[in-house]
Every structure is written in structure tokens, then in C-alpha cells.
Image (cartoon, rainbow, N blue to C red; front, side, top):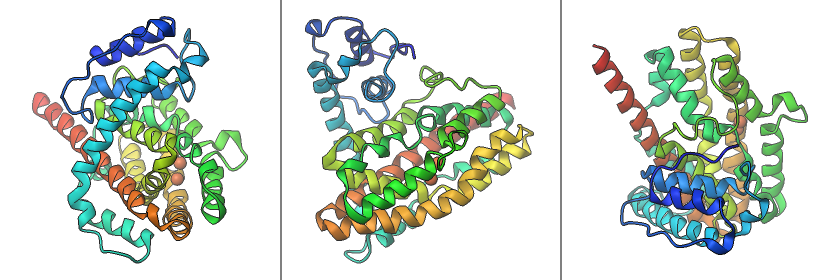
Length: 326
Ligand SMILES: [Fe+2]
Ligand SMILES: [Fe+2]
């Protein structure tokens, strides 16, 4: 993958730094703007995380552990985490105290009042808007499940076994052609889009990058293993019904079956994954270490919050399309 195009001083600094020897890295001033919705900061984070996944052409693999780049990543992550914890305080305060952590995550989902992107895609979206949605999600789905694999060595016992079981399914159940990331690539290709890993990084919004970045952030920090698993539980538990609606929308606009196939796969798979993630992973994780309960809920709320922001952004973008067209 080529390095993306810069979107401001922070991403420019990262891209320039990756093009030079590590001794030459200077410092970049990160302004006071929020990082959650900032395309420049989120692109910088996405690039920095990507060094831990597939890397970039012409960037040596040792840059993954470059102290200057890690220091910048930590600064951006601290801002990101602070903004998320700040935004989520009210919704987390509304969760009943004690009881089963899986039930608490379900309370957060029930209280979520984010806009229904799936309902719009089902009933109203044009073909172009569905393609737009597929492009925006590609930065996350082409590495589907990879962020959670970082968590496996940090778990033990029943929670580890349950995560391994879920990941085995996400990774195709022993069949390379069933790898979920490959099913997404097939969907992109069948829709006439580019299925190359990272092809749309230059085009997607800050919030699409943030949705992918939050998983890498939680997955790469052992401290946040509870948040990673809470995020996974909320993600799986809000996937099955929306996937059915999105598949129906894709069929409504006449896109090929391979596009809808990715979403059909997730109708049944995620109905199962929901239970595994809520109870077998998060339930066992918190039973083994009760101090992780708050972070499981923080991770779940982060997933819902960023999905709501991203959904609102896309619906807003598409309503502007409608106004322009009318
Ligand atoms: Fe999946
Ligand atoms: Fe899943």
C-alpha cells in the first residue's frame, strides 16, 4: 500500500517522517482541536496503526517501533480517549450497577438513540449512496477482526477460548474463501469498486477512520483489553438485524448478489457472535477480573457513540445530495 495523501500538519509530519531516517524526526504541534472528528489527526493515527498491520511500500518494517512515532501516537491516543470518556460519561452513568456485564452492554444498546443508517440503506438509499457506504466502511472491513486478534494473548481461560472461537469464524472457519475480510473485498469488486487494501483511505471521512482506529487503539493496549472486548460485544450485537436491512437495500438497487452476500453472512453469524461476545467473552472476562467491568462498558459505549456519529454524518451528506438533486 502507498502512503496516503496528507490532510494537514499532523498527517504530513507522519508521512514525511516515514520517508526519512528515524534520527531526523522532529516534533509536530498538535493544536487544541478535537481529534475525534479531525481528518488530519485520524489519518495520522490510521497510518501509525497501519505500521502494526500491513505497513506501507517503501517504509521499512522497523518503523513500527520508532520511539518518535510511538510518542506521537500516544499523544493522539490520550486526546482520543479523553474525548471519548468525556462524551460517554452520561450514557455510562445510566447503566444499572452490578449484575451481568452482558446485560449491561445490552442496556447501553437499548438506550442508544443514534440514527438508523441501516433503515435508510434498506428503504431509501440510491445505488451511489450504497457505494459510498461500502467505500467508507472499507477502511475497517478489509481488516475485519484483525484488531481483536491482538487481544488473544492478553486473555486467559474461558474468555480466551470464546474469543478464539469467534475469531475462527470471522477468519473463515478454515476456508480462506470464507474469510470475512475477503467476503468484503468480493463485495467491493462486485459493486465495481476497488478491493485493494487501503484503496479508499484518501476518500473516507474522519469518522470512518475513527471507527477503525478505536479498535486498533483498544486492541493494541493491554490496559484496554476490557474496552476492546466491550467494543466487540456492542459491534456484534448491533450487526445481525442491520445486516439484513442493508442486504435488502443492496438488492433493492440491483447490485450483484456478491455485494449482498457479505451482509447475508452476517445476519446469522452475528446473531451467534452476539451471544458469544456478550456472555462468553465479556461475562467470563469480568467474572475473572471484576476491575475490567467499567472498561468493557466504556468500549461498548465507544462503539455505539462512534457508529452514531458516523451514521449521522453519512445521512447528513446524503440529505445534502438530495437537496442538490432536487
Ligand atoms: Fe464478520
Ligand atoms: Fe461477527
